[in-house]
Image (tube, rainbow, N blue to C red; front, side, top):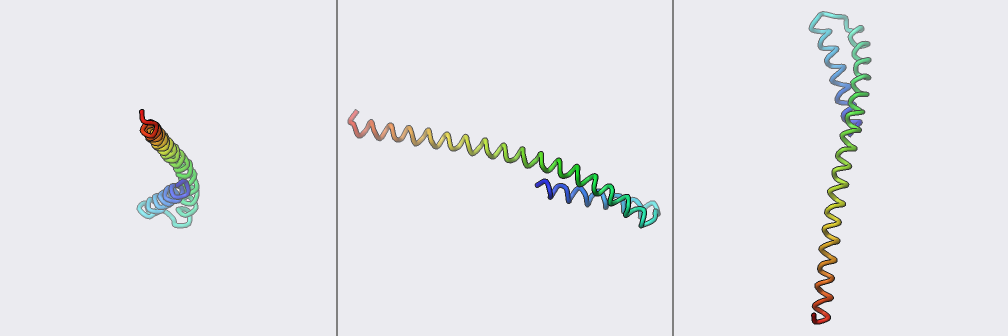
Length: 90
């Protein structure tokens, strides 16, 4: 996820600089140099945001799976106790 965010943000940074230079009549060479710099900056920011997002999603999924596994274990334990009680005739 971090790589995807980095690529998207980097392309946004480069595109904005090049489009702005085209709108204002700036030189293409200068726009590309600045655009690559901003692409790197935005890619770094996108990478950090993507890593945080991935960590958040992984943590939420892990907690949900652990909770569901505990519920399954509790249900199995209750079923086993019920089966033992029925077998012993209580």
